[in-house]
Amino acid sequence: MNSDNWCKPLRESKVLRTTQYGIWRVLRDKIPTKTNLIYKGVDSPNSLCELCQEEQETTTHMFIGCKVSHSIWVMCDNWVGVQSLHHEHLIQNFHQFHLTDMSEKQNGV
Image 1 (cartoon, rainbow, N blue to C red):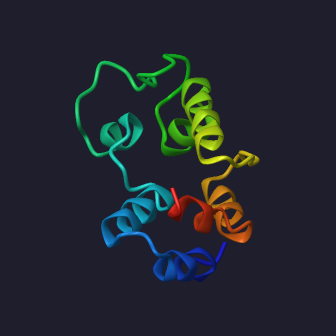
Image 2 (cartoon, rainbow, N blue to C red):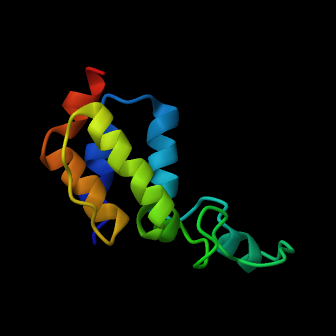
């Protein structure tokens, strides 16, 4: 997917720059997951997710695949008062968030 497809809405969003940077890091797989740290040579006893202990801790698993994080996302959806689909890819979730105007609802919270 062309990076401009998600970079432009991120740059134009009303969230703080630090939040934009955090979202950018997640979408670019630039956060220190166990898998990323091991790849960079950091010693770790294993690469399993700390929340579920069932799969490798990758960015996609942490935010989408993990059953524990999924339940947290559902609670957040309920708290904000929206229903959303949770896709298999982080960028699809980001696009859904902006295409459905959920960002406007959340800004009012």
